[in-house]
Amino acid sequence: MKATKITYYLTTVLLSLLMVFSAYSYLTKPELKEGFQHLGFPDYFRIELALAKLLAAIGLWIPNHFIKDTAYIGLSISFISAAIAHAASGDPLSAVIAPLVIFVLLLASFFSRNKLYASN
Image (cartoon, rainbow, N blue to C red; front, top):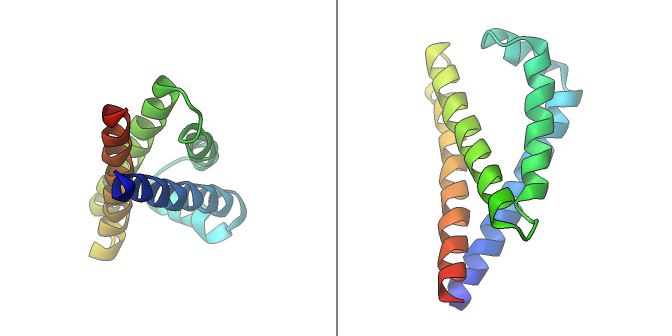
């Protein structure tokens, strides 16, 4: 039980920090604007995704199952879509694998959370 709680909080904190940093980077770094163009996305999508990641980072901490699950689902779609977009654009394997590694972190957070709630 203690290991599950540590896993949940550690993975959720890391995931939240990554999403806040990612959102900040999307909004402030010109090279990421170019990266979205390279992937074929319009510029407004970069802003939408930044806002969605900020909301998800907050949503992971709100004590409401629907909001948490919505954040997990949205981030899952985002990470899987990012891997597909990088693969379809011919980006290096590292660019394809990176969002999948974060997706594994998300899964660890999700399943440890569910295990904690199931035991209560």
